[in-house]
Image 1: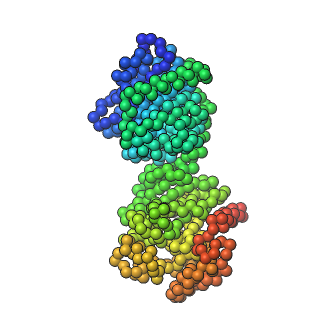
Image 2: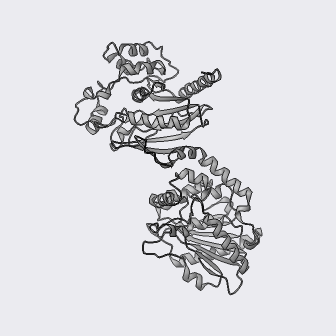
Image 3: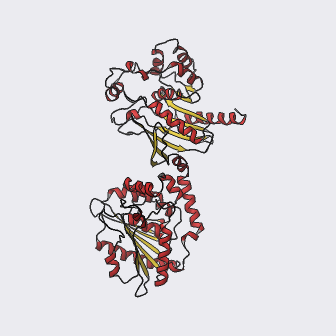
Length: 557
């Protein structure tokens, strides 16, 4: 660090944090040295000590390590220098990654203003290589969501202010509107987290002001003149705020770690926001060489954790949500049918039938990998390609999730074309069940543009699906699945009934076909001639299945 304590007492002390360095920048690296020296105020300029632990790392956001809290050490230094200089308030400055740290650190002080320029607000929403380097080098490959829950506020600064864990400081947020990436990925999500609109000019009850200037396209530092002018404005605002509210001086304030109320607010906020996802993420925190398919967490998605299962032949995208039960209960798997690729490009996760109940362990939404890399395909029946059948690898992933979650029951949900895939998937286990709505039982004789496009894109050496083995169900394994599953058909769906009657009968297929054709049909489940259920009725059925599980457990089944 670089420190100046005098020569005269000042109403504020300047603290600066740098952002990314170039490969040629030597450590220690300090920001705003010349402007700080030209000013008469005391200052503390910090160089990120985390960068010294990894010579190839260019940006670490002063993130420390699992065992080292850099913020606590910097806070102690700041308070010591403020005490020596009798500086009652702070101006914390930073641009880009340094702005992120300035906001994070300012929250520890009541008499402070963070002056930040086009900062990041969530390190995992910046270019992935930097955050992943931090995760791998200093946090033992811990998944993003586990890091955010375990170290509250360290990686997403919005969590601090949204939870009310800050000490009442001010933030002057200067954003270049020409930096579309930082507006979209950092400013707007933070404002949303704080309960403000994306075009807001202030937030957190007026303690955060948003200055927007269009300085040109791209991400770069604000010009020195505009920076100095913004800092001057921030100081004036800070002094007015101090006169009006009389916050405690920096050198008289207790360390942030002793403020149990705010610590608890932040912990509870992050536990509520990331806790369920963190339980999922912890399963993928270390690679397991025994996995036939490599599963890794790729994103903390809205409403769940996005996981990518990769093998030598292909990739499967899953969205996983944690439910009420951490052991026992139902693991539900949702497959999807036809999509509109212009509206829902791959990966598509169908949430329509998702329902939260007391028996829910996990919800797993599976994108049809057949549609990956083929922008025009609308339906794929989870058939994969000529050289790859994704069902066995998906089954392997689900078995691992079943084991890790301790689920008592696995239920695979599919309607129409997704019902075909659900049957194939459920047949890979002797205990898995399916919830089926008008399931298609064969793809072999299907015709039309959807089929033609799928053959051309994924099965180019075949003229029709009649020569693709997996396009026909294995009736010997499917009949037991149908017998232990819940199936609903719509007798008003003429094309579906014709589909059932068109399937060639054999000694092995007849029993399965008769089972379906003898179902009474439930018009309350479907609308008109639809083959997918109404969401309301699907939710009722799922809750009834959950209730039956609870009754089974109560009598010891």
